Amino acid sequence: MSVFRVERTSALAAEEVWRRLTDFRAHGRLVPLTRTRLLSPGPTGVGSRFVARTGIGRLAFDDLMEIVRWEPPSPGRPGTCRLEKRGRVVLGRAVIQVYGTPDGGSRAVWVEELRVRGVPGALDPVLALAGRRLFGRAMDGLLGS
Image (tube, rainbow, N blue to C red):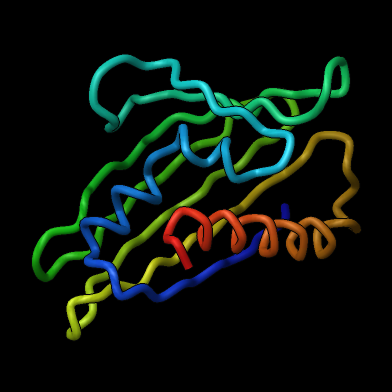
């Protein structure tokens, strides 16, 4: 299983960083060759599901995700969103945490544990490097960095 971590600081308040990082539809606009579709109606929370479709034509696959933990940030407590990846190709989990900082800004940490079916474990370091770069760019785009 490939594991990687991406961390960003922002002058934005924790609540705004949370809102931006958990706008899963926006993720699809920032990740190349990916479109995100929400599968659950209503406000986002535990049980919400969405799919990220990545690729072109027949070379595309769906990354099905479900939110299993949803705790927005509040004064003195970080926000935590945990996603379970349940697709046919991509499996694993992601945890997004947003911490307020004493200066009114925030620190966001995104940790992914993922396995891609058909990709040997020996390539986990390559997947982790690609994941750090891809998710780092996505976080930068979502935060306006």
